[in-house]
Length: 516
Image (cartoon, rainbow, N blue to C red):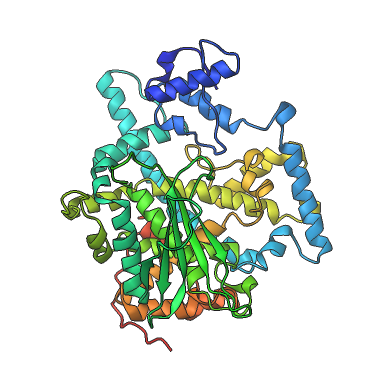
């Protein structure tokens, strides 16, 4: 999106404006500014830009991508969908989704459709309430300024939602950073929870060779003192490192080959200058706990074959242990142990903790709805029979009809990805599998609910979860592993409760289980 006047960029930081000018100059557009689009419907600039006309221009450029000219992806979408449906038919399946899901935890299109349908009404209801709150703010500001109000549109939501958030929570992320020093978070938070829950111990191994001086290696010993494996902590960003956060399994456990696991967690935290502490945001703290959930899945592996060991599980199950492990980041006992001021050692104020957690549930109606819209689109496309796929001219109409049928056609809440730029499912390996993120989170929040009702951070609970889920890899049907732990089918209610989309139920505490 080309911007002609710097004044239109009001709301951007000085560095963002400079970057936009440099991007324009690189395209031969001297004296102008260029805002590049990211591959999501919503663009980061929509949260900051004060100029409503520019926000609308930016939004329309985003949703209007890949539907005309040389970059028109509609014929590509139509061809891919048809070819996938024909392949599934040749393999004896009614559609592509049925073929894919047979090998996933969900097992069938019916199971996925049921889960998405159960999650949609509360998400949409909350999104509508959030829209009403934002509209009220727009009306109030218009009245105070003596100007005519306007109806909330998709390009307004991020900008005004941020103002509602600030009014309600007055939460400054920088206020909590001094309490999240990276060493404390790892050793007194992440490792502490693993010690209390599973009986693990972590010993730094400074004698082992490292591939980079910023990494650390820990020897992990089991509850009986036996060597379990090695854990590599690689948290700092560097030029030679890919972005994001992930877990690597450098050596996969295998009884067949007598191998113990070597696993690593990798983040991209900016490294401070010499002598300065590394202070994290709570999002980064949660990411550390998340990735360590993957690490535990690898460390606890106890399978005969490496192909069935640790994290070698279906896509809609692999994030389950990691999303579950996030719960310990905000557990009161764990938080009290690691959330201490890096200089004074003072504990984090409980009032700040409450604000932190409440702010995390803000706008969840919107965020869940925009995700569900894309997950439903993915299923609608890939549950088509070969003789029912639309041609290129019918792609947009099919998308609109699918969203309307699912109850997800909300004007101010567009799908996270529209079909012509839905790279996850048309070029990224997630075809019929975009639902996996929330399916795993349902399992994780079910398990979190189970933990809380059975006493929380307790060795018997940890040993039971390890025995039933974390150690098993894919040695048997993974949904059976979940049932053996949870004692029931996946239930979406705990996830809805955790996101503040339904009121929490009252649960009676239960005794911790005895691990066989």
